[in-house]
Length: 205
Image 1 (cartoon, one colour):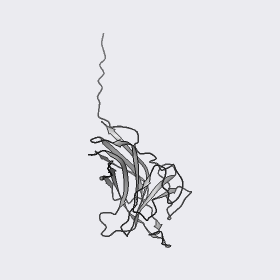
Image 2: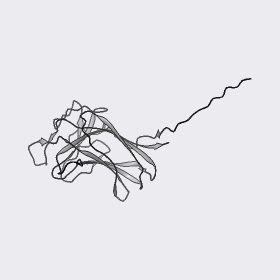
Image 3: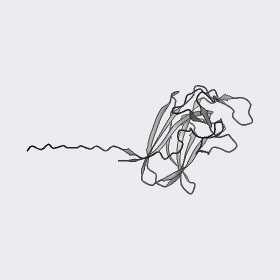
Image 4: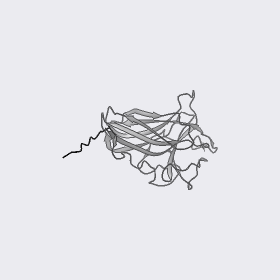
């Protein structure tokens, strides 16, 4: 009796675990220009308002009319000419282990129009329309912040998903996303970036 022989050829395909970022879509929590969504804290310079939550077709601020990448909410963060920056962070329910491999995906965009006050005491809104970069830091239990990656040269006015992979050399208990100035700019400037749909997953070959 002739037997059929089936040969299965396997290629390594990355397997992703669940999202280790909570509320990465920014859809939960109160709606206000200076209140962060549920699960996030502000880690920018003291004395300034935190990053702002934008709501599609509901809360139009700074002249930004962008629709969310997913759902109805997203975040804007700025850099300022006085060398202050904005930052959002989150304590992780599951720490990131040493020597494991992780992937971060994030939807980024800029707005053609972005006008804001430079300080809380200012009454005049000025342009913040220069693109800003994003630096990503892992924080150890002792509070040491270690740069693990960056997103730069963001100039698209439509949403685009950016990704990078990293392998922690220490255990991280929190993660932070900080604005920073583009490397080709000589002086600090008033700029911004729009953020939505953050995912952080462990990859397994």
